[in-house]
Length: 395
Image (cartoon, rainbow, N blue to C red):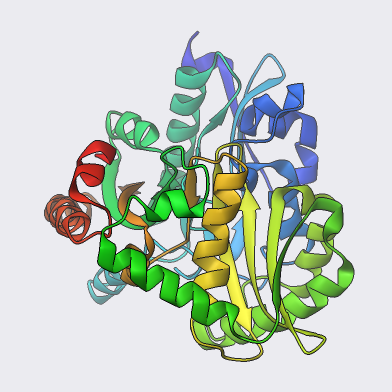
């Protein structure tokens, strides 16, 4: 199949592509009734962002969805956005922007293939089965050409898979390596079975933290699907606003996003809430993939010792074990997760910079950064909570 036979299109609204066409590329497994591997690239999640105003005018995330079609059939799509800032990305390039602009260039707008506000690894070049190579090549070439034609500074694809990163590298993009902390399910039958894999000191510490958290004076419940009620979102919105104001200045998601999530996404959600004296006082929002649980947001109306660890990390592990999920991805940053059983795990992104001199300088930086990340992962893993034989087996 020649490149001339593939039509590349930029579409400003997801509805113009349609759920059937999009999901045929993003989550073909769902056509047979299976849970999507990645809940964040589904039509219903990305359209919830768009319809709620969490992306679009005034947000700095302007949708430019990319499609590749052959004979009228879409074979590949990508969640592409024109960015006027570098917020909500979690693999940050602020230093690149400052250097570029100090040299007299204009870094923004740039193009970003990503799930907005979501530091979770998954496919970014979404292809129909059988079109993996052709579709990805078309999307990469189309996105680079779009960047070039519009005289934009750069193209980025963040939290892609390692396989995509290596394939994109072969197409001339630069690879960046970072790390997060993920929990891995080694076939545990329950939480105590997981604790048995830890060294004695860390095992005792986790038991102590769980006991402290459970003593907050209330109850903790996990809701999924139809168990989630509008009142739960009313409470969680207050928690989310508080966290967003402290971390980002203003929340990334609008209130309307949670209303839409209740209608279209609640089967993909595990909402952990703590109630005390008849009112909800804290909560953690998780999304459920086919083989992973993704921790996204946390917030509280009252502070209680270790309640954050319980709702965000230990309840997530409980849920993953009970539902036989292989991984818990607990979001960005946080070396404190290491002591709670979450090990450092590489994450990947790819980048294309239009200015050759700037690209060469960034390329040298990325090479040194990858070496530093490798060393950090090795050191942190050695300090992990698992018995040494356990660490060696997981590696």
